[in-house]
Length: 139
Image 1: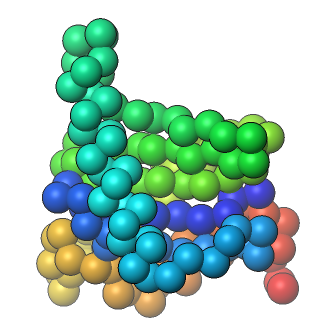
Image 2 (image 1 turned 45 degrees about the horizontal axis):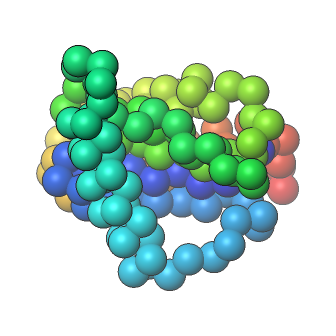
């Protein structure tokens, strides 16, 4: 099950977040901002201290009760997807979310890069994909 999607701009600011299930503890908007900024900082530090040259930072954060996948675009935007620990293909799901972002946000002439995403068509398509993947289509 996919629990949440967070999109972080290249400066570490939260530009979009959406919960998809009731299984995730509810966070305040301030807590989401702190989570985004903290992850951005840890991601940057991890890429610098990695013994592997050219490391892109944290790609997977694994805990007993969830997994958090990170996909960083070439422009530095990070897509964080929170899933159940047993979710089979969260990396592919993260890239599907990115495709929707590219189609409905980056191609929108009224969107200003690095700003919060407030585009209904994007939000509707993100939620539709999450419902399909979680098996809650039509609910």
